[in-house]
Length: 158
Image (cartoon, rainbow, N blue to C red; front, top):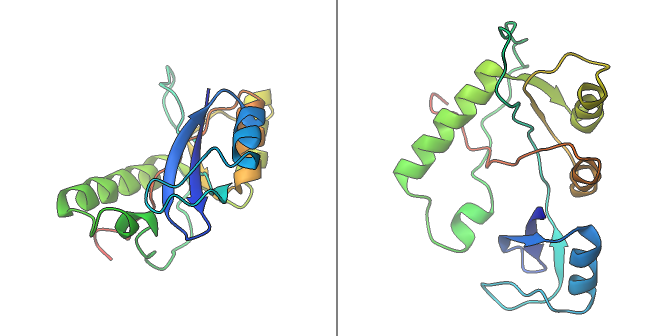
């Protein structure tokens, strides 16, 4: 099963599970996937991102501090379907972001390449985060490389 973040032509975000990428493509091309907000059938895969490493048995080396980034705006889907993001959820996502930044290496746009290197044993296995296109994330999933996506909310201290 493959989990995709999806977006309609009206920019409403939602998710779906499919047997494989071919099943998604067939359903989308047939107009059988519709937006739960507006019923639009023009659906595309949205960006997917960070890989979260599984439990380790050896100590984790200190991560390289990523370059300072300006605070990001809340994800588009956060207000499009259910109103403003509840403060408790925002606080949880801010803590999750802080943990990812504290314990993982920022690899930027090299995310897919670095994930493959780790999968093949060419690079040290560690937690990484960065950017990947929907096609890159799909290709990683097809190769058996687990990745996850979390909303990247502004920092709690920002």
